[in-house]
Length: 393
Image (cartoon, rainbow, N blue to C red; front, side):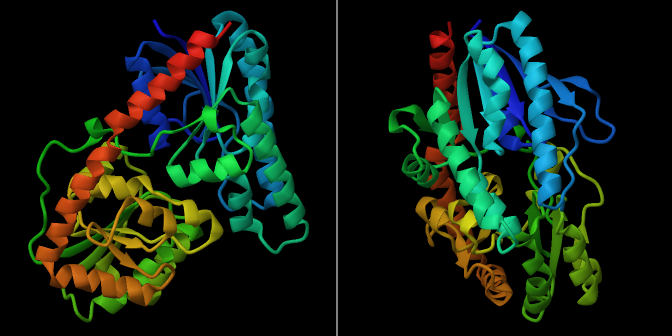
């Protein structure tokens, strides 16, 4: 037995691919894992997920809330998580508490477990100041809140016994924000390959299928896709797009597809599907799209879906952004100017018209991917967890 691990997560569970992969790795390494998460409509208050015991607190995430609504949601979850963590810690005696940000002040919910001996690991998925800027920049008081979130981030980074983050550019940025270099480790958001489809893809002859899966929010740029598909259709007669995901920009994407009268060329899954089923459908794609917009938050974007496309052998068309450039090259993915639907359309046409070049990029990307595989990342993750558990008092 490696010890007991408590995860604090302002999100659903199951939902976040990174969290699910870490849960599986921790359970297999011998940890007893509990998770405090949001409770969505129709979800049970308590449930086993991937071998962990998930406690869902009575707070739901509502996309598109204003700044005050977001604050109330985050604070309510943090308060309830603190109460629940305190109750659990008295009888469970956790060795490690892993806090998944945002928000960084969710660290406050780990105070009682820390007082009784637990070590605290802060897992930085995204920088909270950048996320706030993306949603609320230009509004009254926004700059003040961004500065406050920056200070909270710095306190959280220094207070944690260890810090995890998703790639090296983020690691360097967090060190600039005050994280002690010796306490921060990169565990990338790559794919736990056990969820990959086992059967070969069933592709439809004569169709050039463009796929996107994941969250559909404005900063991920999915709203570029209807216009890009409409433009590319002049040169690629069999082009069709499928989207698997939800989010606060989904209605905008569907409305634009309807305005362009794309009809059967543009399809959106009406329900949220399990990861394994989504990947089974995505592997049918002729190309997978990562269309993130060129905003401050996305300068550090390195999407899990990018690794999933590569692992599935699907050619990738990707927004040309700095962090992605540091992990993949023009020889491995097809880049387009971020935020430009015409550039995206040209990239789709290029893949469709030169399948041999697209296949060469797929093979090169797969070779590069070997260094990023989850088996490597899981080993780093478990190494940090075991180190922290050994130091628990």
